[in-house]
Length: 102
Image (tube, rainbow, N blue to C red; front, side, top):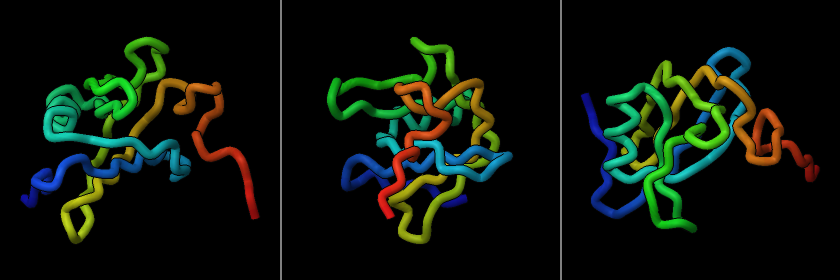
């Protein structure tokens, strides 16, 4: 099994609702957040603004249960299929992608 390549720093993590296939959010992962995600089967990320590990839903209760993890061909982007327990966006929207531009 291939592993993500964290040698160049943070990796992009794309979170998708397993049922609807909607992209819920995009965040950053470091090796520690990736390992925590594997261990707990819930999403963990690295907060660039707070410079700390972040368990999605720890404050809001809107956790994301990981069902499948995919890795891109360059090993630098992680795709997580989840079952969310609530909205993904801090605004209360189901997905962080709710503003249409074009």
